[in-house]
Each structure stands twice: as structure tokens, then as C-alpha cells.
Image 1 (cartoon, rainbow, N blue to C red):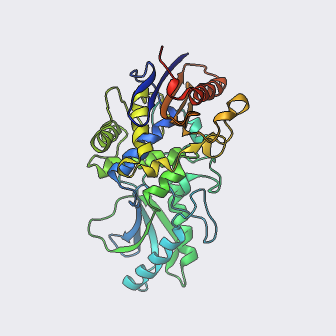
Image 2 (cartoon, rainbow, N blue to C red):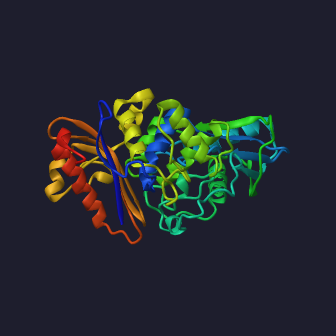
Image 3 (cartoon, rainbow, N blue to C red):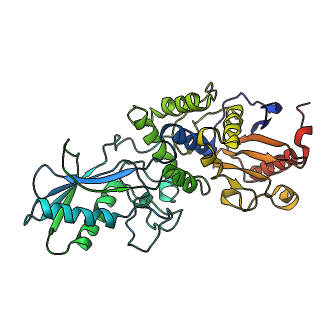
Length: 392
């Protein structure tokens, strides 16, 4: 097992503690701090993800086009998924039926084309992430078209995901079309298949996700892997890249360097969730971005607002117990956990009033949950020491 870490003063960046802080280490879900920050930089806090429906190439066909919004919900009006306030598939269907009927009177809808080509739909899973994350319900395949994060239960954060999120979205859309159909516009034998929209096709319907500021607030506290993966792919596309997994190692560091002058040496970005053990970031880089988040640089107050509070909210709600309870309410941050690591990155308002940024990574095959408690104890020691913390 290895421990690496960095503690710096928030106001001037003075390094108070350095334990392999320049060594690139796997991140687990603390990577989401980088994804959220890059989303603010590239997309902006008010950016919304569009899902639309356009006319098909022949009458009787409509095309459902996804652009990476996993929050689009198949739940009926009045019911909320884990993504409260998400756009509804029912709204998209109602708009579609009305617009299609006006353009093609008397011709029923017999075919729905599912367009998930915003990035390559086959490039949907990080190779070194165990598929149990999918079956156990922690992460969906990263396809540009899906509904409710592809959860079997849209109201449960952890819920089994399918092997065909695009097909599942298509079936849900056809069901929504039937429900919205006032009189025979939707044929009884509607089929669906993968395809792409024709350039210049007439638009029938459109819904938008909530803004990025809200998506970050829904991603960070529960550590939602699907939102992290989707935002990373969209960052790549909006940056002019192809939205592939491979492109993230260019898109994310470039965004962080350009907007926040974050050092990118030693940074390797494999995915958007932190699930891959091959993601590598030095702890010193994590404290550098945390200083910017704490300061609210260039709208990073949006990320700061999504951090968990020790003993109170998010993935830190049940932590910092026993002797460590003294630090409850004084530590905010982002947790990380995969099979080979526990990590914690955040800000401590110390007992002496000093504000400190920290990053701790405990890594090793066979690591046990006791490492999580040990990290809490280490963080509590930083709280007690404050500006007296020393590397000596």
C-alpha cells in the first residue's frame, strides 16, 4: 500500500505537507472535480444538453437524436427521477405527434430511427472497468442517447443498467408516442433501429437538460458516474474533438490548463467517472484545482457548491465519526473509491481558522475500508494542526 498527499494554504499556495505530491496516482472519483471544472470552463454553467426529434427521410419515419443527456426521463409527469427536474420524454413525444401530424396528415408513424452518433456508440465502456459496475448499478454504458441514466429503477441512484441503453430509450420513446397519440398517428407496429438523421431535416421536437450548474450539483454529492462520463464526452465534442474515450486525455487537461492554469504534467485522463484505475493525477494538481474551486475562479463556485460536507451531506455524510467528529462541518470535499484505492480531496477550515486544500490517496491491491477511516483521521489531524502543520 502507498499513501501520497498534498496540503497547501488556500490563500497563497504555500506547501505545508508534501508526501509524494508530484507523483501521478490513480484518482477514483475525485477525478470528477476535474471533469466538473472542465465542464464549467468549456461548456459554461448555463449550458444545456439538447435531445431532439426530426423528420425522417421518408414519411412515416421520425428520428430521435441524442446529444448526451442521461437525465432525459421516461417517468410520467409528476414523478421525479434521481435527476429532479429532468426533461421528460413525454414532452418530446407530445411535440413530435403534433408536429408530425401537421406535416404528414394521414400518414402514421411506423418507424423510429435512433441517432446516437454524436460520438461513436460502440465506444461506450472503458476497457479496464469491470462490467460489474454496470450490473450492480453504478454506471451505464456511455451512449449519447439514453433515458434515466439507463437505470432499471429511475428513482434509485444505484440501479442495474442494461447492455442496450439506446434500444431501451427507443422502446420508451415509442411508448411515450403511443401515450401522446390523440388519434391514430402512431401505427400499431412501430419499429425502431439505429441510424442517423439527414442533414437539414425538419425539426419536430426538442427538450433541454437542466443547466450544467445543476448537473454538477447532481453529479458530485452522490458521485454519479454516468453524469461524469457524459459531461466528459460533451466537453470533448464542444472542444472540437470527436467525443471518444481517447480524446479525453487531450480535452480535459487542455480545458484545465487554458481556463485555470492548472499544471497538467503527469496527468492521464482515461474516462469521465474515475472508475478506471489508469487515470493518473498528482496530488499537487488536485490541491491546485481545489484552490481555484475554493476561490470560485471563473465560475468554479458552481463546483464548490456541489462538494460534500463532512458528517452532513453527500458521500461524506456518514464519515468523520468517533474522535474524528471534531472536524465535522469543517471539511468539504470529494471522495473516491475503487477496488485499489480510497481518496479524498477537499478544503479544511482548520481549528486556528487557516483554510487549507488537501489531497490524500491511499492505493494498493487488496486495500480495505479501514483506509477510508485512516484518511479521515489524517484529515482531522490537518484540521487540528492548521498553519502549524509541517513537513518536518
